Image 1 (cartoon, protein in one colour):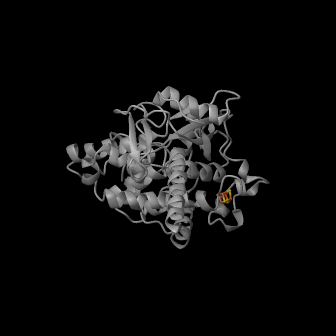
Image 2 (image 1 turned 60 degrees about the vertical axis):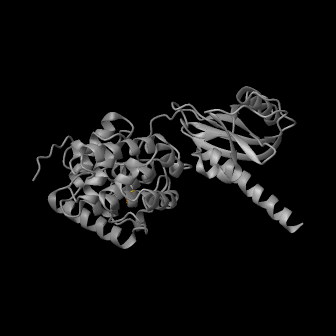
Image 3 (image 1 turned 90 degrees about the vertical axis):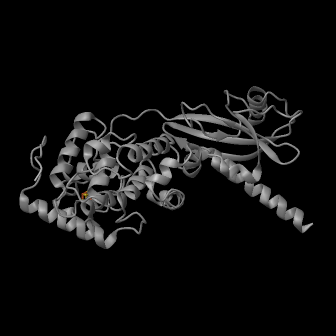
Length: 376
Ligand code: SF4
């Protein structure tokens, strides 16, 4: 048995720990949601866990299926161009995850013979793989007695043991990992870890924990208080910033639209978008669309009309994105970063999530126009 270092006093005796694990794992087996990556190999677990960071499971399912169809093995992923990988990630957000996954797949192929490592140190050396992802791969795919802590597990453990330090503090986080390490059993650790996450996702939810339905309620200290949802304590959050953006959709005579490739670094780095500006205070979408055409495409346009309004939240920004169509007075000059793309080919380009919605609004509207034309 591997040597284990506790930095938190034992939370259970041996008997309690066994009962806790048995209750949780039985509940998980009976109640888990159908997800394609249950019981999968290390590569599948890895891809799914990277996708699940910052994204709800219900959203991930379709992306995961399409991604695994396009890149069924780590070799397929490593050999694919990054543009193709980003296109399959398009709409999931947090694109650094896709870039790291791609780079890490190349490392697995070149340094580990194409086999996802089964050692924590080797896993942690891969781009984008932190302690959580390593714990998921080791426990779920390799049946290793290794803990994992994600936001759901943070919440469950904080409530079980009424932890008074916020999980976002380094000391609070270290305590949660130490307790998770105490709890994970030698038998079926992957099942147990998935059970903890699933409990947080479906029963011990952020604002409304369903304690009477909880399989580990007898062990829970927060359930003995009037308001279990007060755990975990939160650090004062950053202020949410409201922003208005405007993208100009400039179409040429043959129905193509002009796209801009964003710089590699920064938010939405390397993705494509309809030329976009951040509106200045009191600037109307129409004026902002003209400015986007002038500043980015270097052309003047006729009066822009609002085609779609998208609302999107990213990190601490609530963004309202206007999509305005406009007819150019002259053809914009294209190049490496500005392309004229037929509407039918827009899906071949990786877009950030709000721009995907704009693209969908544009292609849906085009389909209606085609249908109307056919009916004439
Ligand atoms: S008893 Fe309630 S607060 Fe405690 S873990 Fe279960 S759902 Fe969460």
